[in-house]
Amino acid sequence: MTDIPVVVVDDNVSDRYIVRRRLAKAGGFGEIFEVTNGTEFLERLTRGDFRRDAQGTPFLILMDVNMPLLTGFETILEMERKAQAANSPSGLVVMMLTSSSNPQDMAKAAEIGSIKGYVFKPLDDEGVQKIRSLYA
Amino acid sequence: MSLIDKFRLAFDISPVPMLLVASDGSMLLANDDFLDLFEYTIEELRGLNVEALVPASIREYHPELRSAYNQVSTKRSMGAGRDLHGVTKSGNVIPLELGLEPVTDGVEKMALVAAIDISHRKVHEDRMHRAMDAAASAMVMVDGRGTIVFVNKAASTLFGYDEEDLLGHKVEMLIPEEFRRAHPVYLGSFMNNSTERFMGLGRDLFARRSDGTRFPVEISLTPVDAPSGVLVMSTIVDLSERVAAAEAVARKSAELAALNVELSHFAYSASHDLKAPLSSITGLLNLCIEDLDEGNLDEVRENLARVIDISHRSAKKVEGVLQIARAGRDGMPKVPVLLDAIIAEIWIDLTGGKSTTKLELEFNYADPLVTELPTLKVIIENMLSNALRYGDSSKPEHVICVKSDAVEDGVKISVRDNGIGISEQNLLKVFQMFIRLDERSGDGLGLSLVQKQVERLGGEITINSTVGQGTEICFTLPSEEKTHD
Image (tube, rainbow over the protein chains, first blue to last red):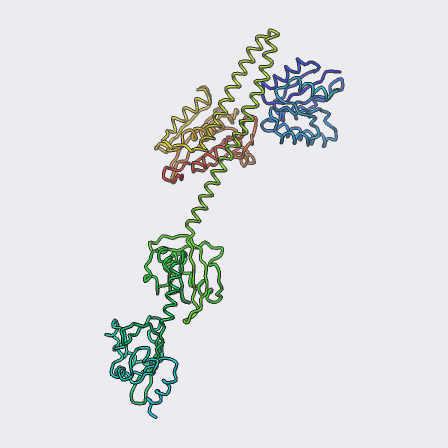
């Protein structure tokens, strides 16, 4: 299996650091991009930064739920809107990153098609397994 | 047949006690019912003057009344509207209704008197009065022209008058001045269309006490048929207590709303300021353990420092939230506080003493503020921290100005900055919970909390802003006397 490219979208520097180190230790992950907010993510997405990589593996997006200005859910919904307008699927695998198990959030995630799952902070081996199973 | 003989025939068949009186007061003729009523025989009566039948209190000027009547003799009920009495042989005073008719035999002027014993009616009226006096509600009865004809004890007490100061007067005396002129119109229309109903549906009604003070009332009207015409009985309920209770409920609701915000704040904070940092701390410490095993001591040191920093900031945030929650629940003692000392303290806290932002102070309100110190600190801290956060880097200098001014019954404090300002659509949302306007915002609850706290202290908060120019937030605090507990 080829390395999975990752974009982690999180406003908290420690949380991004933890994800980066965990994925590095787990192995099987390629380049890890860090983005600090939803708006920046959407801009870079439109610019074409997160197309499928050379091997055709879709990017993994780890999206923090709780962010100022544009929340994680709002970012995904905007992404889906843009994809629909352009009539091309985004081709990304999105997982929500969160420290809370708020049932309202989980229900929201279930409603959004692009979201393939939930990973709890801090990212641990169980979380990594969840990710891998999406790519299996 | 003489006139007297004719009358004698008529008297004998009349069901009503009747008397024939000469112009000098001597009694000429009486029927059996009259004699029985006054307990005289006809011979005894003939020897007396009519003044003997009149109560001692008016005996003196009754002759005058008689001669006045003789001058202008018309058929009428005597003393209409007044309580009339007669005195029997045994000295009993009986309540009477009297009818008078002038008669003449061509030579002499005489008066025909019909006397009806209204004791039963009196007893009945008294019984009714006593029943109405026993009623808890105030009752006022008026005639078609608005003259008060009856009040019960409750009404006297409610309005602060003695019964005699009300009877015979116009009901408008019980109405505040500005409503007086219109009242007769309303009364007239009620008389035209008199059905039992509430007065002034849809209007706020007020009544006026003897001391001039006014109070809110609810009035129900009932038409009453009386021999003299249609009367209006009004039942008056003092709504002061109800209004005060409603206001108390409204105040409690506001307090509860404020507490609700604080509870939400705390719940949000528990999740955001506790759980999230804890997950970061866990993640970092796990990495530390692994790094220790691998001998990456530099990483360990750095991450442990991060852990400490996150813990500190977290604890501070939660403590702040707890303080506010405690204030909302327990209230706090109000003490005199000096605004400049508080601002200096908060400024150091926020900037560590190193900030290029210029702080200008202008205190036009000289007296110390009497208020809850920790609550005021939170309010000021929130406002200063917002002003600090939203500086406009394109401007040569970032300036924050804090001003205090005296206003009607209180003080107004404003914090103005020349930062980036807030757009019109965001301005509307700025007091809403959980709205963070950009990545510089904190938990998005600051201003909603500030608003609730200001309102709890009895003040008001307003915000003005122009994008690119700056923002000004003002709040008022009432002075000591006005605060409610």
